[in-house]
Image: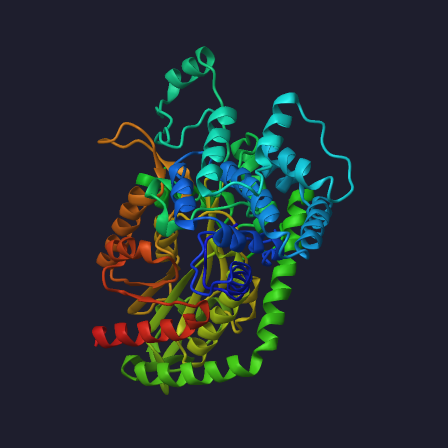
Length: 580
């Protein structure tokens, strides 16, 4: 279950919830989606029925009571499993078709298990999954899991009867969390103590004390419930966190190459790039710059093959989506090109060309004696081009899973419009995983076409500060005026912690205020370097204060992702006027 976003899939989910609740003014705290991103027919009905039969504001307060827990995802799954049985029994007498819908959901649940990758299996919470199996196995006429006596008690407790009212439901759920998970909803979530040590002390403490190393990265968004961010505390923001096995540094590097494609830099140059950019709050991070091309030196394992298949399917979905709306998008490109052309009129200058006479080009002098090449001069022509480059960063973290086709289409519209106007444009998709910030080059300055933008796909986390720093470093257009724009939800969040610094002896999570402060400092530094930095905000209202802290007034807000190209055009026009 995912937070509400402004996408076609989530609007369909909202319609299902409204229909089940019999209310069309409802703003639900949850929406249900299948692993493939499509709305879940049955579970969205369950969400609507919860609003119909129970006091939804009181349920939301209960969800908020454990929002800061590291086990929030598991609790959400189990709570909705209990609510499902309760509202099913309440609604069944007046809506008998619900029995068929429930059985079909059970069949689909087990059918999906046959298609899951190894990574998805690793991301499962075993205790939650066995309860789901126990619930749906009888309905699918399958043999259920072998449960321990304690697990059987939990399964029976989760079968909340339809005779309960809201107070009794909440009391039962609180009892389940307390009795089976030793968690009291009235208690604040506990944050584990974190101490950063290095060198000989690290080795000594590792031998003396019990240790547990956990990775919290996955490429596939889990099927779970998340509290609506508008009602959650900052500490309760949903994390894309599931435990994976320990990976050595070299294994992580191989993983990056097999999953995301070979790096555009050799080992030496990439190490130099990290030495330059991975400093301060990012000193424990790594970079991976790629076009997504497979590596001939790294035969893919099964997990990488699965990701490659998923990425290929997403590319085809992106292309199909664009083809279905090609006439509308062609019109959008023409309109946006005309608007940009008018705004760019003041920022054009003659285009120099190579010639046999003119101003000597010192970079080509060597060609005359060595190659007998007389074309070593530059001559001005009547052709003009804008002295401007635009670098666009597209957030490709897992929060964009339900908007991938639209983001790819809008990115293509924008890039093609700028290309027609002669503007140098470079587009990166960025995400982070296992300590690596991955920038995938979708379109370079010199690329003649823009079709590679349809390679866009979403996965992982987003470390905005490091992504902005890296994109600015790679913005080598040679233009006097440089615009760096980012599509963002103003919620930077990464699994790699901020390492201890001089004033702060402990590591900190890269999220909430700490991540916002880091990104804001990076934006300020880039502006001092001469970049015009702006944001296209596509996110929740509660993140607007973060947005203003980071970007000041240099942003535009869009309510729907199909407004992206127009919003970038408006932001571009405004910044050009300010430069003038």
